[in-house]
Image 1: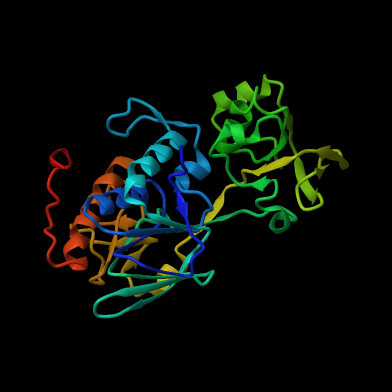
Image 2: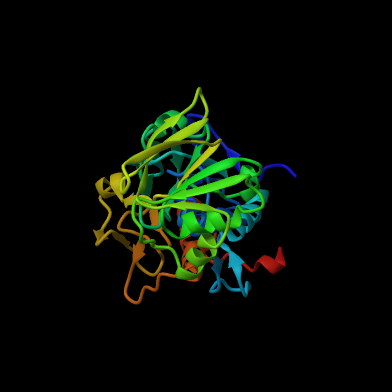
Length: 333
């Protein structure tokens, strides 16, 4: 099976719709844009699609998505990517939307890496803003070379010695689920209290996973790729070196609306204000998902899906005046 994610390093894209944020709402936007015959680009600051779901709880079961009695976060993301794939959206991953210039008939958005998207409309689905991983020592030198911030596919770490850094749900979920796949798993946390669900913590503590508290990374060692990590126990003042081939930095992410705050959007308490059309105060800019606010707003994944469809369908006649607001039913296609 070919990879459904068409990543791009091209510097300029001319499309109908730019979707800022590749979380669940953004991925559904990409599907709906294709359904309406619109070409789209998704841009996201993370290196993989899925947003908060993929970064923070990929192995957690979600129970409130219509049609799924229960679905793992990463499975939901994979299904959304597959659903959009026939329409060939372009993914600009690892790019942060930086500058926006709005003209009468189009919008130009540039990323912090210099990529440029010229489009007829924008839908912002960036959840709670740009995610920036909390750093580890030597992180930049080893990102993508053994150091990662999330694990969308567990088998990517099969047969490896792994160090997981963190004390939240993601860290413990990955430690528990990688058993039997990875060769040796060590989890370290700077405190002896964990933010993860108590049941998962008990499962990991009762497993062969080595859990070290009051312990932090001093430095990552390697020649081009991760080969070992020096760690230090603050309680005993002892240091040791672990031979590992992978480090999972599950320290969480800081979120910030960042450059979006400069775009002249009406923003209150980190949310973009929209009307019932999911329209912002700019004619060609719409928003959907957790980043939006309006009277009666309920922040659920299911709500975001409906908002994504509403945003795309209201953007369609702005993009092309010959298009109707109502899309017709997909069962009629």
